[in-house]
Length: 397
Ligand code: CTP
Image 1 (cartoon, rainbow, N blue to C red):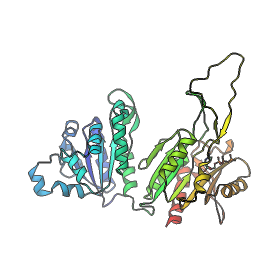
Image 2: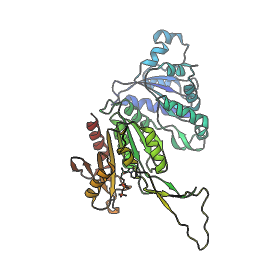
Image 3: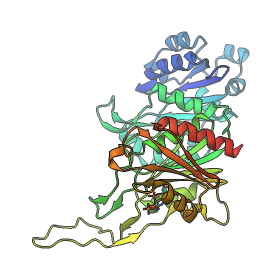
Image 4: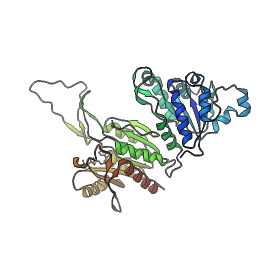
């Protein structure tokens, strides 16, 4: 599926560089050609010989290697690829990229390239959380770079947290998404997903049972058809898909702000299980237990994100798809919901506990449009996602 594509793989100097050996194999298995470039520090972790042997091509390391300049100059090298992948993107490399440095072959290529760039960050959790790294991340994203990971977990340095480099197969999936020549290529699509958490006090919140599985599958399916996906997710159980721009939020209010910031988009899919109510006055400190007294929570209505976007006078996405989670009279309730909210389509499903749909891996949905109701057979959430993504692609064609 990557046949005929060329990846310029810039390997940074971090312990995760060893994963690049597998990454090269995986990319090649799928038909891609890989031109490897290594920073000086990368060569301390993996040898240019192993990298070159797996890539089947020379591993470029030095900007001032005259033979290389005679064979292929650095400007030309920066332009040969369909995609530049920087993995591991260390804190130092990210800082250099954000600052526009060009003091070695890797950074010079990154400055000179006119092809899309994907960074795969990897570093110690404190380095990742450092304000400077987060500032650089914002800069690199606003420069249009694709970001994959980092993942959370045990790290080689013995600490735990976000900073682990994404796994080779996740990177391959993200690369495929960016390079997909699918029907949604260059179309920007928004997906909301997961539950929201509505805070009561700093330690307690109100939540719901949404796992985020269906929204995640939809985002992955849209990306696989080539869409540029903005994935606005509440605190979900399943990790976000690779190859999409992830915006993590907690509450409905944060989700609305993230959705507004993501506009304009050509289509919006609102799969999140947004809490209808929030606690009116969130306590700034932990509510203490007082013997014989029960706290009273007063609620306020949350904004209806789907309805607000559907009813926008200006900048409304061309296609707005909502979900209806129902336990009774599914079709009637969902048909009324589509009209009330003003969206184009509603994907309706039965979330009664006996169906096992909420939190499960399967779904049985009805697609409700202006023209009527389609009943889709029970299938996996991945299959529902693919079918929906294909329908969206047709509608946007
Ligand atoms: N939705 C939203 N913002 C909200 C509530 C819901 O964007 N504050 C969206 C959901 O993402 C979904 C659709 O609206 O696409 C329907 O959600 P659902 O919970 O089924 O409907 P409600 O509006 O909550 O209606 P009810 O509780 O009466 O079923």
